[in-house]
Image 1 (cartoon, rainbow, N blue to C red):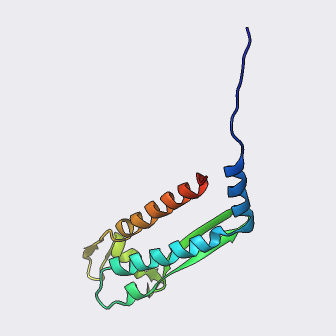
Image 2 (cartoon, one colour):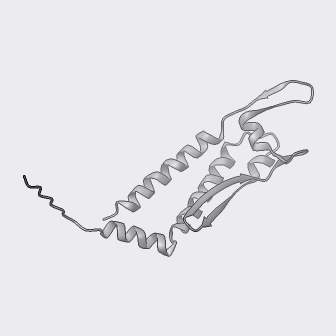
Image 3 (cartoon, rainbow, N blue to C red):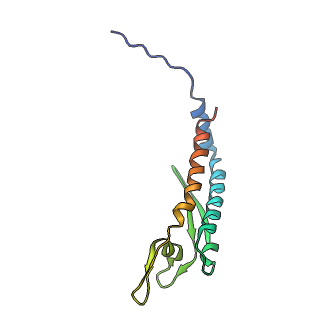
Length: 128
């Protein structure tokens, strides 16, 4: 019995992707997506005063072996520094014992951004 293995092609795509990661040029793309996410969240945030919609921002976390985009909101409710965006998203109790139901606005707004990121990243990895 014999086994024959044939391999065609090379590692050009992988090497190019590795070079991109080494040069950290992906950080420019992350900034693009960060801005897109802030715009999407701002337009999707239910408005009463507009403070929460205007308080979105992003941070890029870049550590060895790890990078991420964090979308944050600086509008907080005292006491406890609870982000108002989370109260809107998930709902909250009131002082008189009632409950305000949440409104899912974050997930639909960010779905478009995540889909665009996935398409662009796949295009980058499979680029000829």
